[in-house]
Length: 349
Image 1 (tube, rainbow, N blue to C red):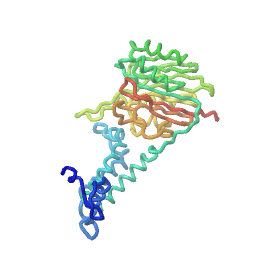
Image 2 (image 1 turned 135 degrees about the vertical axis):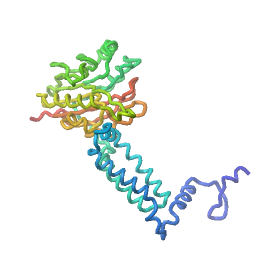
Image 3 (image 1 turned 90 degrees about the horizontal axis):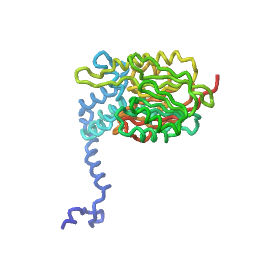
Image 4 (image 1 turned 90 degrees about the vertical axis):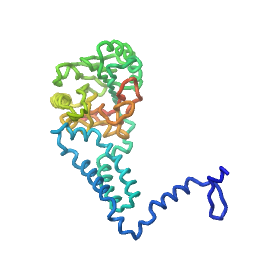
């Protein structure tokens, strides 16, 4: 008797187990039956249509959303890719409501989203390059810094930047990374480890009052490269204050000025910028450099939070070098994922 509950008539009058395909066909038949000849398909779904048009408008004019109130513009830009999740939801609701106008309206945000982010869906990674770099916010409260250091060193990076280094843990990182990197320097809470000699190491003033950025000249086999390491101030989302990022924005401007004044033609920036490439508040930096993930990565390369990455706030950017590949590394004991890239140093004039 129990088996009969799962039996259905077949085309030849017999019975047999109901197939999943049959259920899908019946569901599709119910959803799409009655569309033809029903004039209401062009009148239903006014609210859903308005939401679809609003979604497209937000993505289309995100750069003009003001930051005056709670840095709303920057908050929107930080999580802009995630707005695309609303598109399939609206599509399904339009089918359920049997609204043709909703299905047409949903095309608009879909086109806008693909125009903004469609290029990130393809794998642009190449196999070339002559310098591998990596960066990782190791988390000041990291319970096992030695293991984290070993993990990121296994990436094969020639140059490795670490951020959020507590003074008490620096000796642990130095000891763990010494077998791989002969040269290193720590300035404040950021550090740089390199397989190649480093000179002209100095702090970069990002208007914080303490040291969270540095610069060094790395003598690669292809010539000198200016490598910057930066950890911009954190941002917060508060109920009354909104997206508080004033200090981050001030530091980004200062970092941008330092990079603009850099005399070396080839520049690599590694660090936790606490902002995405879409965030207009980082324009002082992003307008001068190319993102390796955007140019040669696969997917969005989200790096934070490590448990469920939602944004890429850990950045590798270059000038005078050609990104060949860019990727995220496996999770460590930090709340950020490490990120790495391989670049071809431009030896032209």
